[in-house]
Length: 260
Image (cartoon, rainbow, N blue to C red; front, side):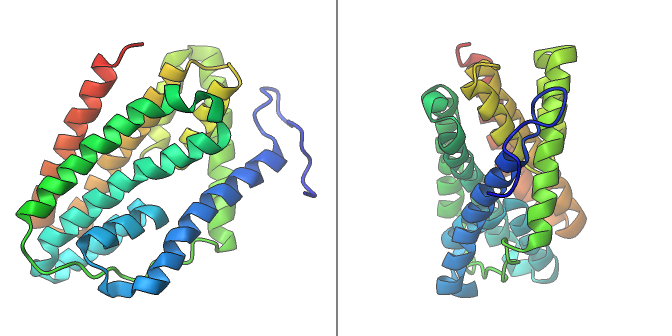
């Protein structure tokens, strides 16, 4: 409440009150997963570990299970599935964020992302049917409400919001997709909030907004695959590559065939 509720940059993108409001929203989603973990603990099975990990942070979940797989070979199969499930739950987070900041455009932005979620969920179901190894054990997640994480998140959202405004002004849609692809490597929440807000204000077409979000999510898969290759070893990378490859195919088909 004490932050100024007005834009403070030439492109009218940086509103301190709104930036912190978005931080509270994102941290709240992560905190919900963190609280659920306190009830279920590390004994949560493969499916629940992936769901909780996706609610807290799919990237942090990828790091945790990649490290597990590197030291315990039996965890390779479950680890790959947990990483895929967490990456699927990412779309649930995205849909919640879109509903929170662009309720009037939710159907136009959200419907293609629902289709992507369903496609990834089917991939997870197939993986679960094939997986017969020991259930995964979820490592304790970091506290998502830590002030340092919140400040980093706010700074990232502000930078991406400003970059989108500049990219749109100078390069049009190409600039937006470029920012989405780069920012999505490490975070999808910020680009989701930025593009959904623009679409809700009529400054960006809904078709461009959801494609930017989807592009960011696919870029995020690339980043996670790199983490797996670095931390988890070849066995985990092979399984994750198959699962992510199917997700990539679904995302590419959606972007190409969904009507503008």
